[in-house]
Image (cartoon, rainbow, N blue to C red):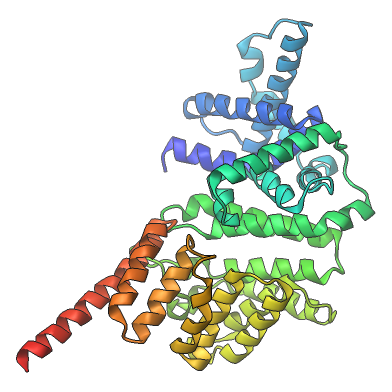
Length: 424
């Protein structure tokens, strides 16, 4: 791994903790972001030469704090900037601050930041978008993709949210029990989207993006510690664990996507699966079903199937039908169609997704599924057109490669049929 790649990964992983701490210091969102960005620039300058710090988060917090203080002094003309060596020489200071990172105030920083971003003065879509940008550092393009909207629309949404936080004088304190409960749904949704951004990657990016999945799981566990009897948070944590348990089997040695039914299940993390299944069972005993619990129950059915043919697709379709009622969405319907294809055949599934084309015209998975169903129905030319559209919309090289594999298969089958006709 090159120095630049290592630095990028370390900064991305440390961002939530560093931003949370800097916000606690400066009590101003823009000041905290500026301090963090300056610390990142100094990391790019110093780490390749001096080697990686023992704790990247501690280094970024310390340098960001000094940088932010200097910026305040410069603006107020209260004192000249200190010499460069006073900021850059971190050998002793880094050790000291790293030893204090496990203190209670540091442990709470990330959750404090999450709940501030999900303040009720903001619309739900703005809450989640600004939290993804500030807490996890996702790009506007990445967040827009998660929301299925354009980049310019998402940029405006984030800008409005940040301005509203500043104008509203949102308190930068840890919310009390009542406020935490009121904001829980938005925080849970944000954690879920962080996980999805890490999960939706290709094999080459997987090592660098894995920290997003791990961070989402860590945040979910923190939420579960705060809301120990909340079944939806149990369901969220279980869902993330069960999905991430399959990570080692999702790509083959050539970096191509391996579909769920073709994965080597011996590679799945048994430890994560056992933890996830226990949480699913515990959540369902509360008899208060919610969207995360339903999705976790679907993931649990896949996890419990020793072989693909053991999968209970009838139950999965019923669960997706329930999820459609709870959260009507064309993407949920698209997922349900996969189960319908297994239970009632590709024609029934195709009829289900055809009305979704306009709403999912920019969604890779719609055209990938449509092409697959058409292929099963021996409608090769229509399948090829759908696959071409899927390739154009692919988010990763692995997704495009997977679709090209289907096109190659169609071309081979067409060549075989042409040979047979010539022989006759």
